Image 1: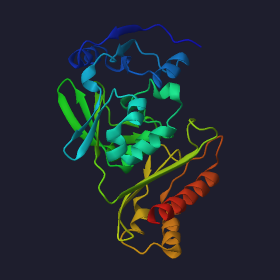
Image 2: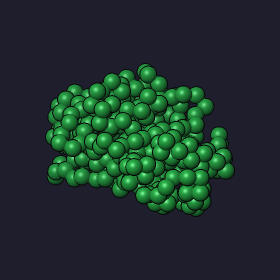
Image 3: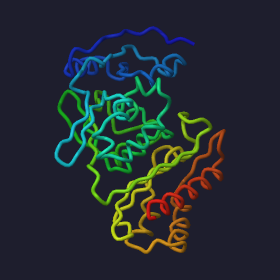
Length: 284
């Protein structure tokens, strides 16, 4: 299929974007890399009156170290994250996960802002943002606001973005000397959307977790921070009994939604397997 008719405008500035969003409201869609939007246009799941091309807005691009945070512009492409020394050094979880985001051709075009704004529950990046406790800068014609990733993802493809809003930057806390992280996902083919996945960002001191953020993706309508299961392991001796206690809590904490490829029982099995494997690996 091909998309329906629409108008197309190249934004000249961020202010221009907000003028257009104010004029067209929900009938306008922002396009950057287009790797999420174009398929929905072609299948006519999206039918905007206006597409706003923001690719020329250089102020929304780039990766920089700002005090104790790494700030990434919303137009930064996945491949730039993949190649960034700053990301590799200061946000190791993101550096690990980005290798698994889609395929090379998509990483060359797709942007972090577009991926997060879509909020696909099977995508790796939203889960990483929640695990890292990232902070999003959201702008509109009246100003800016900061929203924690843990408050941003509301429901299936629903976020804190309101009419007239645009995600402009993502800030990740810089890793400490105690930071450890891990990644697992089950995919039919590397680069495809996951059927079940887990990312963990944690801090380890004297063989005990002083912080632990396990976030599951592709198991529910949003990324799931398993804080109750994590609490069972904080400042504890990590052994078989401790992990099994956490797994019991995890079973109650995850409200898993199965799909045509992976039933809920299989997702739960994978979730528990990945949790045990990663906790053991990071502790050792």
